[in-house]
Image (tube, rainbow, N blue to C red; front, side, top):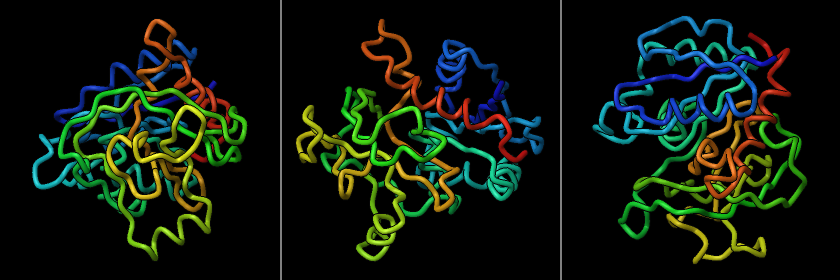
Length: 233
C-alpha cells in the first residue's frame, strides 16, 4: 500500500480535503509540517492548495524556500513522486521543480467552477489509469492559475510530452471559452521530464465522490497509489 505525505504550510487549507480523498481511495496519509525535514518514508508528497504564507511576494514564492522543500528536492532526485495542486503547482514552479509560471487569471477574477480536462498522456504514474484522450470533470478554484511558458519553453514542453492535462470543452476540443484562466495552449497540468512530478491547477481532491458532482479526481490518486509502491524513497 502506498503512503502519502501532505505538506502543510501556514495558509494551506486543502490538506484535509486531500486526506479525505485518499481515505476514500483507501490509502493512508500523514501531515508534514513546513518546518519538517523528514518525509517519514512516504512514496508520494502532496503539496495541496491554499494560500501558503498569504501569497506574499508571489503565490508560492515563500513556500518554495521552506525547510521541507529541501527534503522534497531529495525525494524528487531519488525518483519519488510529487503532486502539486493549485498553490502546490505554484510552489513547484517557484522552486524550479517544474518549468513556467502561474500568472493572474486573464479575466483578473477568481474562478471557482467545474472544468473539463483532456488527458494527454497515459504513461505517467498520475494518468496510467486513464485512457488516451479521456475527459475528466474536476473543479478549479484560483485567482492566479494562468499557466505561462515562453514560446521556446512551450515548444520544449510539447516536444518532450510534459503537458499532461489541458482545458477542453465537453467534446474534448481546445476552446478559449473552456479555459478558465487563459493558460497558454490550454495547459492545466504538466509533469517534469522524468514524469514523476505533476503540477495541476484543478483540484482532484474535490472530485472524489459523486455527491460532489464527479469522482474523476480519484483516478489521479489511484494512479499514484498503484505506481507509488516501490518508488524510490
